[in-house]
Image 1: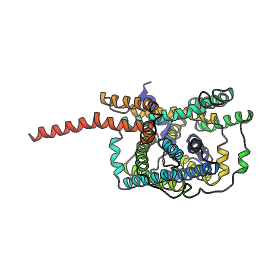
Image 2 (image 1 turned 45 degrees about the horizontal axis):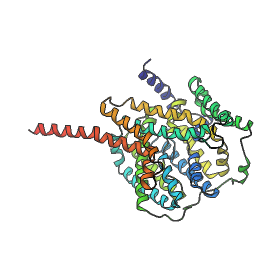
Image 3 (image 1 turned 180 degrees about the horizontal axis):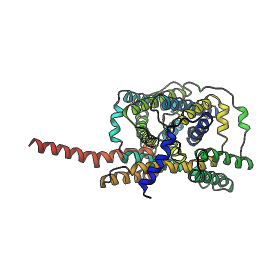
Image 4 (image 1 turned 90 degrees about the horizontal axis):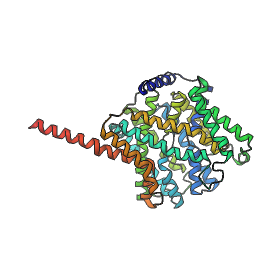
Length: 446
């Protein structure tokens, strides 16, 4: 069977599911899988740890992200884009937030988020974002999705292996006893399971991983008692907005890259769920994301964008319906307003999370490959994709020690990949086509 036939059969198996409206319990369970596979709850914890935020500020950050992600996910799935996409903080902003936090400039970061989100909001409601769709060819979208998968894989392997050499727990028997079985359960159930077993593969693996962790005495519930049942994030937790020109430009660049990433997610999700992606969905979708980012800036959170790894979940489980995503949005809001519930979610050991993310990252990477298979097979496109992937993977490591704005930009894989593929497409594909049309017009006039 050819690759095209395999892909066609896979799409047929998903398209049937995308039309059905699951009952309440299946809806909630599938939504819970989306919650765990997204790193909506892990990303703020990771950023807070890297900055060194105190416990109260870390909790506020997590709650802010949950509420912003829940609000946008829910409105996107029901009223705006109406696609099976989960919203959350993009990895394109991680290094920016860490740099701002270490420089005690989180108020300026919030100001940068507010201004850049407002600009994207204006571009969205005026329809200018939709007009950029012609630039998001399969070569561009596929490359960006692949780069996001690669970027996610670094974080995934860090969790899966228990850190890096020298980290306590790295490659320990306890860590591998959690991560390997969790990943194997996902792989076996998604590839050999049928019906509900396949659909709930991630949830089954999560439960199995947590049971193993409990048997090994690794589920510490002592932190639950200190968490309240109800709470709301503090408004402007870092103080009044401050507006720094360099910070605003940096966040705007990152936000435009997040738009490119999200456009690829929209295309992959629409293709998976057999939904037509028109300019109206794109305009509404990005307006909703920008509004959520502005809300997040007031709560001390990050910008929200479409989550690529959840597309990998759609692909692996065969569930392309947007109704579980609606459930995920509701669950995010509950987790944001009930700190004790969020703390319970965070009890899952890092190694189990790594075991869940590994197949999801692979599914995401293959979604990018699937998009690349649809591009026009030309030497220019081969060069555009190949060079962009190479730069995104290899270049950031050479600038990891550079400080300042350029160090932040050049050490970010997603920024490098997205900017490279757009620039190369403009130079190697767009410019020759424009020159050829101009030459043809001149010959016609002659």
